[in-house]
Structure formats: structure tokens, C-alpha cells
Amino acid sequence: MKVLLIDSNHQILQTGLEKLGCICEIDYTSTKLEIEEKINKYEGVIIRSRFNIDQQFLDKASNLKFIARVGAGLESIDEEYAEKKGVCLISAPEGNRNAVGEHALGMILSLFNNLKKADSEIRNGKWLREANRGIELEGKTVGIIGYGNMGKAFAKKLKGFDVEVICYDIKEGVGDENCKQVSLEELQEKATILSLHTPFNKLSHNMINDTFINNFKHPFYLINTARGSAVVTDDLVEALISKKVLGACLDVLEYEKLSFENLFENDTLPEAFNYLIHAENVLLSPHIAGWTVESNIKLAQTIVDKVEIEFFSKKTSEIKPKIKRVTGIGGLFFKTENPTILKEWYKNHLGFNVDDWGCTFLGKDKEGKPASTQWSPFKNDTTYFSPSTKEYMFNYRVDNLIELLVKLKEEGVTIVGEVEEYEYGKFGWILDPDGNKIELWEPIDAPFL
Image 1 (cartoon, one colour):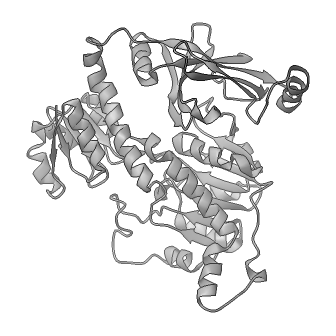
Image 2 (spheres, rainbow, N blue to C red):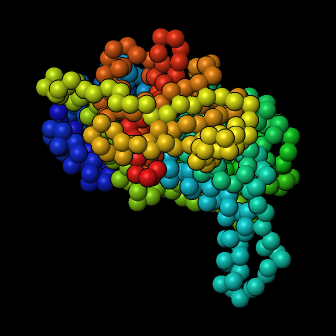
Image 3 (cartoon, one colour):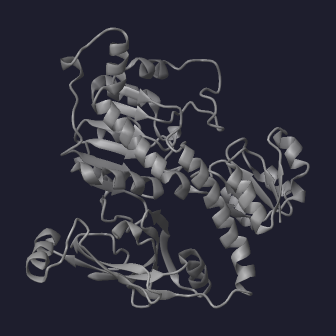
């Protein structure tokens, strides 16, 4: 498979593709028209945001099998037309979701504690303690709009701050143990901090306007690490002036060019932006929420992994031995009215060594390696078992989650959500014929030992 890389990325992307058998060529400088003249020679394209891939480009790419964007979204691609032509579209939101979650948290903590202002004052010889008295996250209600990879990463970061986290998403059943899914009306009723994690689309375009802002019951703080086009900056500034919005953390702005590498489409400085750069209750960063040393590697590796799953796993499966499926029980999760009381009962009467998650039982697998099994009670209103309505959910240990999910999808099994990866392993979810949600876990047991 011949692949053209038209944006620079971490070297492991090219190296990984070549290990799969791809022939990679690089062109970071040719114009779009020049690339269109030769794109019919390639079966794959790797981009970030150098230019739009539109119908004209796709018509020229007569042999194209996939376009992989090294980023969270696919906004630079005409998705509908690409899919009509049978081109597989690949993105990598898993690669920078942790970076975005950390950045969003860092921005709101910085704003709440006046860190930018205080730092600037000290550098100018001012030592103003009372003028920089901060506020705390604890006790606040954080509303998240868009509960996919990025929203979930942010909610996970908030877990230790004693805040209520709620989310609104157009998809049903996306809430989990870190966040309760609610209607938009309930979010606007309760939230005092709003964080946007929506993709670039028609629904999110200019979503945060004066009407939307005025529907909030309480004055609130706004965090936007998603796309600048989601916020009407003029309306935001009016809300900042009226104190309907108490402060804003903006990693993205509606004035950005498509490439995200430059700020303005022209040299005119918008009046609203002039207000933002002088406002002490506004924190700005140049579209870098997902831009870390680690995410650079993760994004590249995610693309390699997805290309392998889509185009190479089926070929190699013919010569591989029969894959292992479930290797043991990884956990039992169930609903209860009060998990805290129940855990205390099991601790006092049955000797369970409980923590925030429940109890971890340690043992060994059939090869004698350390293994763990998790016992976890969840509150009755949890959405972690969704779309199942059952009172329980089993977790099963597997050897190779990605390979197994590919096989299960081929067999017609319903896959729920996307693979998530943590320090203790990879997780995926499926539904059985009775509608039970099953969690599959490729474990890393070391953190529990």
C-alpha cells in the first residue's frame, strides 16, 4: 500500500506504517493542486490540517483507500463524499484526549487562582495578596457539552475535586461513573462551569450565542478546548461585560484559519478579540490543549493501530493461530442504593479491603502470573452499564482486546463505544443477545499489586 504523508508528524507514524508493509512518501511543500496531480498513485493519505480535502481532490484520488487525520476530528475532509466513494476515514481522538483533559483543568485552576495576573504583577514589583484571592472548584457543578473522548477525559480529571459533573450529548447512554448525563435544560439549570468538547459540525457552529448563554440560570465560567467556531465571540464579550459569563478559558478562537497555525484570516484585529486580550478574567492559549510531547506520540501510534486493524488484521489473521478470547473474570459490577454503606458492610463483616472503586482480589492466572479481579458497587442511577438496563455488568479478562473486537465485529457482535486505555489496561464493551453490556479488559495488573 502506497501512502502519502502531506503533514509532518512524529516519526513513529511513518516507521509504524512501513513495518506494516506500506510504502511511505513525504510531501510537505507542494500545493494542493500539485498534490492532486499525483494523488491517483496513492492508496492512503496522512494529513493534519494543511488544506481541505474536497470533492475535487477525492475525484482525482481514484485509488485512495483511506485518509487518516492525525487529530481528533475530520473537519478538513468532505466526509460524506469520501464515504460515498468508499474511502475509509480515520481520526485519532484517543491520542490527545488526556492532554485536552489536563489542559482544560489547568486553565480553569489558573483562572480561579489568578495565576496569570499574579505572576505578571510580581514580575512588575507588585505583591498583591488580597487582590488575588482565588476561588475553589470544590462544590461547583461542572457541565460538559460533548461527552466523547475529550469530555470523558476532562470528567476523569475532575474526579478528585468534589464537584458535581454533568453532561449533555446528542447520543444517549454516554454517561459513566465520572459524569451523569442530563438534558440540556438541566445542564443550563445547574452548571456554574461549562466546558465544551464538541466536534466541528453544523450543530456546534455558533452554538454558544447570546440566547444560549442567557438560558443559564446562574452566571458561569466558560472553557473551550474544542473548536473556536462553537462560540460567537461578540456574544461572549457582551456576556463577560454583563457578568453573565464570569470568566473564560479559551484555547480556540473563531478567528483561526483552517490550518490552526495562524490566528486571523486577515490583518484586521476584531474588536471582540481586542477585549479578550485585555480582560483579566480571560485566559487564552494558541490551540494547544491537545499539543503535548506525549500526545504527539499517541496520535501517531493511534493512526498506525487503526490502519493495521482496518487493512492488515484480516490479512494476517489467516496465518495466525486461533485467537484467544476470554481468559477469566476481571470483575463484577452491580447497582446499589448506597455504595459507601455497602462497601463498609463488606469491610466490617467479610473483611473486604475496600477503596473508592470497591475491592480488588489478587491471585494468579493459569501461567502463574499475578492477576486481579475487581468487585465494584455502583449507585443505582449510574449510566456506566448503558445501554443495558440490567442491574449488573461483568468484566472479562482478554489477551488482545483490539484483535478480539475486530473478530467480534466480523461475527456481527454489537460493539458499544470506543476502546479506552488507562494505566491498568485497555477496555472495550459489547452487548450479548440478552442486552447485557459486557466489559472486555486487556489487563495491566501491575498498578494493583
